[in-house]
Image (tube, rainbow, N blue to C red; front, side, top):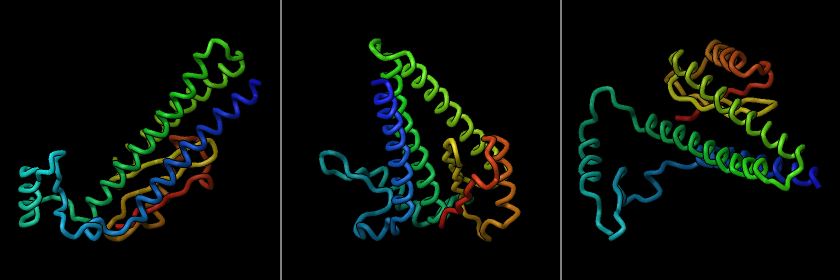
Amino acid sequence: MSVWKRNVVVVAIVVFVGAAVYLNWSYNQQSDPSQDDPGKVLGQTTLVNGEEDEETLSTAQVGESAPPEGSQSPGQEDQTGYFASARLNRQQARDSALELLQEAAADEAADQTLVDEANASIQTMASYTMSEAQAENLITAKGYGECVCFLNEESASVVVESTPTGLSESDTAKIVEIVMETTGLAANQIKIIEADP
């Protein structure tokens, strides 16, 4: 019976992580959002009662006429949106899996082996979260802009914001080295993906 419960917890974690990866991939494959609704101004919102939010609309119109110095280009804004969305999806998937694991660990009727496995999985998820954040911060500190890291037991995938000239082999090697140091994985277990502009 305890093997069955453990398998259910493992399958639930795999499903949530798989869903997060799929959502990130599908978000990355979307076409230009301005083509989805040509009548809508980027940044324009509609309130529940059907009225447009004038402050957001006026801000969007001002931004169209003269972007402030140092602002991002439209491609960079799309990438920043991708990275924020990817982090949010990753966190939501982890939160859901964590909730299941905490329920399993708190179940008084559960076998002690199942409780120990659930607690170990919780510790592992916390370790992954810390390693991902550390890798992302170090990669950003090296000047590579936005990035998001997806870590599991056997591999790591790092999506890095594209640069005007693209990532060179030297850039990729630096990023792989950072991920190796923060995760303990080997170079052949790390995949670097450059986000399309």
